[in-house]
Amino acid sequence: MPASFTRIGIAGAGAWGTALANAAARAGREVVLWGRDADAVQAMRATRVNARHLPGVELAPAVRPTASLSDLSDCEAVLLVVPAQASRAVAGALGSHLARGTPLIACSKGIERGTSLFMTQVLAQACPHSPPAILSGPSFAADVAAGLPTAVTLAARDARLAEALAAALGSPSFRLYHSEDVRGVEIGGAAKNVLAIAAGIVGGRRLGASAAAALIARGFAELMRFGKAYGARAETLTGLSGLGDLILTCSTAQSRNYALGLSIGEIGGFHPTGRLAEGALTAGVLVAMAQERGVDMPIARAVEAVLAGRSDIEQAIGSLLARPQKAES
Image (cartoon, rainbow, N blue to C red):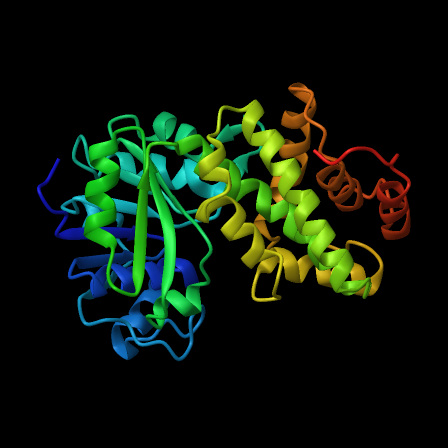
């Protein structure tokens, strides 16, 4: 493991990848930012702006855009910043370019459909010679790219690796807390996306601030039950990558998942168009995994039923309101 990670690769030049590239550069690292679209990469080189995904934010001087995965080969750590369901393919393609032992850090929030694997498990299978880690927490790309104060969690099984990566990527405006609880960080990021869709539906139906607060509180109870069933630590779920991210994502249409729920609530149903928010792709597998371990997640179930077309909005809300009153847990 390098004493300091001086050269960082970013695989994925969307808004979040670009923001993390600027954050790593702000921490004093040399950064190679890989994007799949060669024309978009060429435009970034010429203008120093990712106009498609993060307009108005200039790339830091230390960020070098590229359309060639091989340019990541001499990076000492790589952040994988692609959608959760694309992570396996990109990690597999990276495998032949990275030196053995190069850490690969998942920066997407989801569970792989078809396998029910969390992101670090996917990376371990797709790129077995790279130790996997996960970065997650309450953060919007525009805030991080602009250098606004943000705090997230970076977790790896190896405590020394987690600490070293957090130190290498952190700066006064981008604070990283390190952890060994990989599963807890992954669960917080995946589950909160589904619950944020429910929060958006509450907003879209104009059910009021009281209902929104109740939704977040009861949603967090669901997240805690699921996390406990899958081995997460309670302190992780009550921290940045759990409760912190849930509060942020359930509060504003800057979140794609909240925005999706808002649209569903306003138009009265789910009509998929374009790229789906991560929560829409995670809902089915999250609910199936909860059922497998006997975890009660009524809010997540209601969201999944709406997304699958088995329930309309009023039925979903009615089913939640009709649940028997009981002691809070």
